[in-house]
Image 1 (cartoon, rainbow, N blue to C red):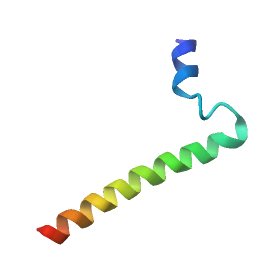
Image 2 (tube, one colour):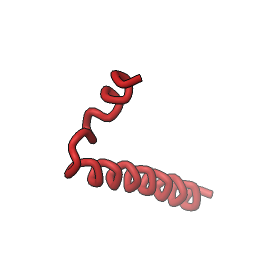
Image 3 (cartoon, rainbow, N blue to C red):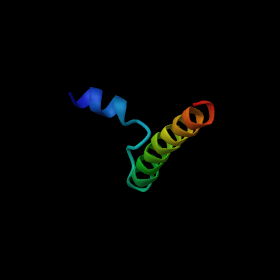
Length: 44
């Protein structure tokens, strides 16, 4: 369990990058949702 958790969070291991990694993942999911919604409204 420790090895899997360490491997899955290899980019967010230090304290100063943890907030940046979490913000980037939330921003990526938000922009993906916004792109899908705009694409759907543009064609339909």
